[in-house]
Length: 229
Image (cartoon, helix red, strand yellow):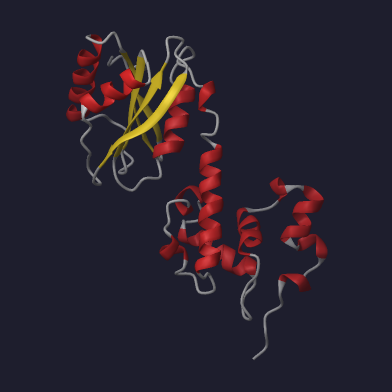
């Protein structure tokens, strides 16, 4: 059986690594970048062939690809554990790059920066996660923490834990956050009830609930922007 040509047999300008060196990483397609991480193919298929099939697992979206497990990546014939781990690590680095400098976050300019930060943090979970961001008196970031994690349809957040962390961090402001795996950004009555419960309890400690942000793949919803706080 005739073996398929490898990437080394291609014209130099068409090889992903050489192309990156000559033109920069932005010149490569998503599949070409993945091919560099995969490094080598099989006797029948090039690394680029494998990369294209891996990308199809995420419906050709990197955001969906980043949600896949090691086992799911290994469903592609030719992607073993080592390649799957490399891909997973690279995708996680990309996610962390979006949230690498939280000290820049502050609420003076509205919800945009904190909304994008929390969306990057929480949108890839396949189950609901509740988190909190703690702020100092200048509304600058002090601490981010996942408070609880639950099922696909909900999770329970304990106001006592949220406020205890605020006291431990000397925070005077809190931004609540959770994701909706369904993609729907509208708050439920339970979301509104919990927000008000934490807001009222925080007042007794001179701590202000600045916002509650719901995130999904579709974007984010800010209680403060919508006048619900």
